[in-house]
Image 1 (cartoon, rainbow, N blue to C red):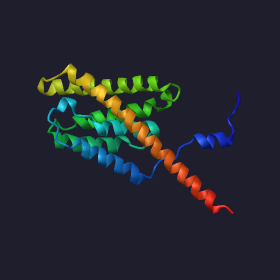
Image 2: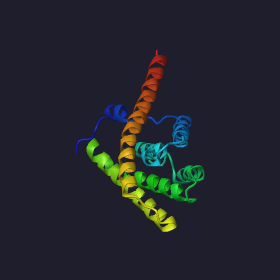
Image 3: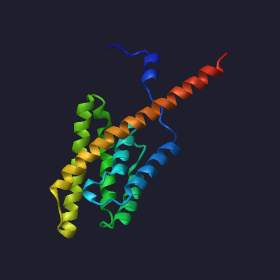
Image 4: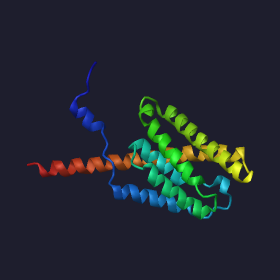
Length: 180
């Protein structure tokens, strides 16, 4: 077995942005979710995609407790049965943490398929819980939200990954300028 050199490992490792930056991205995603949308079927769940993107980039960076609190905030704002968004965000967080190691072996297409499956599973569970509570369900909502969530995940994953690489480059430049 050939082991990669330390220099190549240092080039491929990313440094996560600070807790403040990660928190700011989650607050912006929450504020985006709080915007009034004329048709809620086509309203993207930016916060759910951000939770998945951060947890796939660094498992546990958005834990279950934070996902639960953000979900409760969405439940209160949207007027849904209390705990529905909280359950969805916890399932998204847990699923993305569980999938983290598995996804490293797949190409981008395979990752997209897995994340779409994660979004679809969580939406079906939430739809089933909603159907038990008030009798409403919609297959179109599951399909639309799965597609939107997956597309949003691709965009946010790319943005968060570049943000992480940018931070690593600036740290490297800072240390190189300090050496004589």
